[in-house]
Amino acid sequence: MQDGVNSSQLKEQRQTLRDRGICVVIPTYNNGSTVEDIVERALLQCADVIVVDDGCTDNTANALQQLSDIYESLHVVTLRRNKGKGAALKAGFRKAKELGFAYAITLDSDGQHFPEDISLMLKANQENPGALIVGERQNLEKMERSGGSKFANKFSNFWFWVQTGYNLKDTQTGYRLYPLRKLHGLWLLTSRYEAELELMVFAAWHGVKLVSTPVNVFYPPREERVSHFRPGIDFTRIFILNTILCGLAVIYGLPLRVLRFVLMILRTVYSLLFFSFFSLVVVTPFTMLYLKIGKETDEKKLRLHKLLNFMLRFIVFYHKIPGVKISIGNNSGETFEKPAVVICNHQSHLDLMMLLAVTPKMIVLTKDWVWNNPFYGYIIHKAEFYPVSAGLDNIMGNLKSLVDRGYSIAVYPEGTRSPDCRIGRFHQGAFYLAKSLGVDVVPLVLYGAGKVLPKKGRHLNKGIIRLEIDKRRSIDELNGMGTLKETASAFRKYYKDRYTEMCNKIEQNV
Image (cartoon, rainbow, N blue to C red; front, top):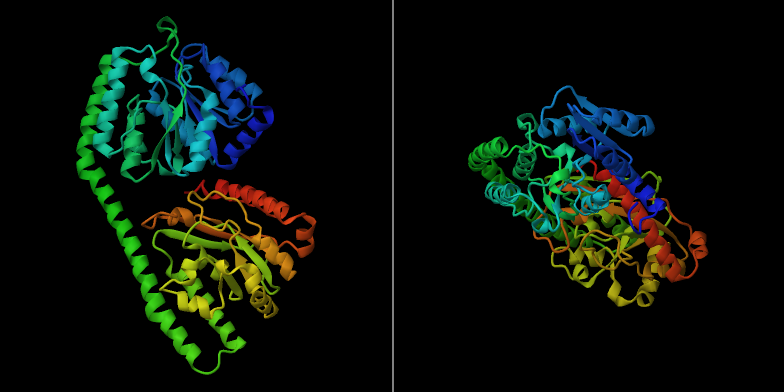
C-alpha cells in the first residue's frame, strides 16, 4: 500500500475512477515473473482492470487465471498468438469500450511502471477532461539504460514535435491515459511498439489535448530485465513510420490544425458580433422604446423580464453558440413561484445568460463592470438589478420590495469568477440576505461555462454547458445550519461534492 494512503482513500479513488469511466489496460507478453504483482497492485488502485495476454508462452496465462478466480472485476483478453503491443492495445481498448468505459490508463507489466501512480493520472484527468495524458518518466536520464534506448526517446521526441508541434519530453512512455472516444487511426494502427507514438500523433492532429504528468519509473538490473525490443527491426519500423507520418503531417495534420484555428476564430467572431448586434441594435433600443411609452409600472417591468427571459432562452436553446451544447436540468421540479435567494457557482461571462434563461422573475446582484456595461448596462438598470458594491444593507429595502413582488434574488457566493472552474470560498452575503429576507435558498450548479469561455480566455472553445437546478433549502433548514460562516461552509462543501458528481458524469462524454 502507498505510504500515507489509507484504505478509505483508496476506496474513494476506486469509486472516483469508476464514476469517471476510467479502467486500466495492461498488455503483457511473457512477463510471468512480474505480471501477477503488477495486476494486484493495479486492482488495489482501480477496481476495473483489463489484461491483454498477447499470446504468452510462459506461465502468464496460469497466473492470470488464478487472479481471475479471485477478482471479479479483472477482465482477461487472450490473443492466440503474439501480435505485438499495438494489437494488444487495440484489443484492450475494444474490450474497455464494450464494458462502457470512457478512458483507459495503460501501463506495462514488466515492473517498470508503478500502479500507485494511477492516482496521478486520475488527477491529471480531472484537471484536463478529454485530454490524452502522457506519463512523463522522472529521472530518466539517471537510469541505467542502453544507448539505443536513450537515442530512441530523443529521436521520437524530436520527430513528434516536427509532426505535431507538441514538445513532449517522453513520447516513448507506455504509461498513459487515453480518451477512448477520441482515439483516431485505430484501423491504421501498427502492431508493435511504434503504435503508441502513432496514437499520439493522430490524437494531436485531431485536436485532442496532450498533457504530460510526472510518473515514477523503475529499471531493474540488466540481468533481470525482460525486454522484447529488437533494436534493428524495431528501429527500422520506427524510422519508416516517422517518414510516413512526416508526409501525412504536411498533407493531413497541418491542414486539420489550420482548419481548427480558423473555425475557432469564426466561432468567436460570430458569437461576439451576434451578441453585440443583438444587444445594441435589437434589445437595448426596443427596451428604451418600450419603457418610454407610458408609465414604468410593475406589470410593465415584469413583461420586460419575460421578454428578456424569452430572448435568452432563444439564444440558449435555439440560436446556440456554435460548437457548444447547452442544457438546463430541473429534476427538483422548481417553479420559482415562491421567491428565494438563488445561488450559483461563478465561472464565466456566460453565467449571467444561463441564470436569466431559467426564470423571468430573477434579479441578479452584479459586479460594477456588469452594472456599467456598455452593451447591456441600460437593460440591467431598468430590470432593477443592483450592484453588490452598493452594500446589502443599503439596498435591502429595494430587495425586500422585489421579493414582495415575487422576484428571486440571484447571488454568486464566490464573488468572483473561478479561473479553473473549481469551487472557491463562499462569502456569507447570500445567506445573510436569505435570512434577512426570510426566504429559501435555491442552489444552481453550473458546469462548463468556464471551459467554453475561461476567465482570462480570449476565444470561445467547443464544449458542454450544463446548469442544474437543485432542491430548494427552506429558511428553517438555513437557520438549522448555524452561523452565517457555518452556513456558507456547509453550502461550499455541498457545491464541491455536487460539482464533482456533475464532472464525473459529463466528462465521460467530452
